[in-house]
Length: 493
Image (cartoon, rainbow, N blue to C red):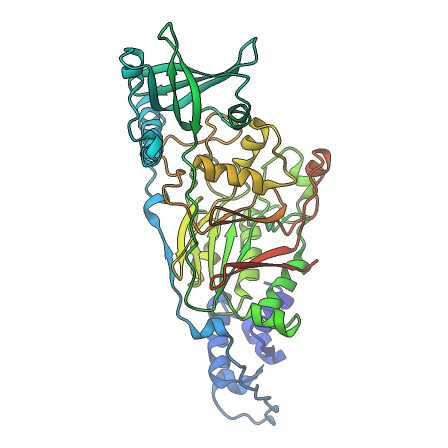
């Protein structure tokens, strides 16, 4: 470790280092353990300079340096409240992935998806009498309601849209007539592999259903839960440490703001409420993620990338809890759901007691407010599959995920999905906050009581993004006040 790095570690805690102490530290066999021990000593002494006298606890022939006693800092609001962070491990596959990659796994996965989403649909009064596809094709009743998974979507020569709807008992074509304008608008947002409800009537031939209504699983209109305590959460993602495009100084301004060192009095008051930081994936730029990536890497060793990220996180105020999940640039399997970033790549993060390493997606609760944090790679499939969606406005695609009650409804697209025995990407309960990243665009909206947040990036536009005409919005951090559920976007660039 270089001299400047050692000094920087102490400066992060507001401590200056005496040259003699620095020389002694460099002789140590275990630098990390020595630094940790000395930081404990200086904190107990309430000193701002780590002198040889403090280190050895004894008198010296040299005249002791004047030790400046720091004034006691006023506690911020977030420090007055105990952490109420609950990570819901039920949907986290870290250490408990059951995917075998065989036929049985795929059958179990899609059965789980169908059962979970059909249960949601059956709670609607219009679909309480839904029957199986087999029952529909028996032709016992003219008017029918059914629930099925979409295995195909196509358009006929006459402009009608035909959905192949499948359930465990069979498959039936469902026709949406071109003159049904409202339904035609809705059916444009239908993708393969999602689960829908349909009301209609059996055709004269008895081999297809003419749709009169289509139902997505949808989230109900509701008033979101709020925290009793005046605390807030900062939502970030796509930091991309290690990239030549990583905006380190911008990230440090974010850190300094959280430490109360930047901003107006009102902004500092908001910073003092931040109790949690969610990092929604792509902590680092990774290695070998895309062709010619080496040309855009400032740090070519992934472990060193994570070490740098860990040092940045260590600068956050001690009262802040940090939830970290992986993205497609991180050291985790690419197939979703992803387990947490492996400890061998990021040991420093695992050693930080304030950092919670979780899988992607993460289902959590903070002070009673439910948060689903998902990196958002499936936005690629949604934007490619559904007309009208774009990378410029990711919130629209996120709202559609809420309608479909699934974080990655398209199977076999750009996003590899692991055939777990259970589909962990279903939104069985609508969250108060849906947080994503991936597309590097900051946007906030609301949908039926769910706050929809894409948290942008700390990376400048890359060459790949330039070719794709993707314009990132770096350094804009959404801060959600959990008591009022209001969002403030803090700009650090």
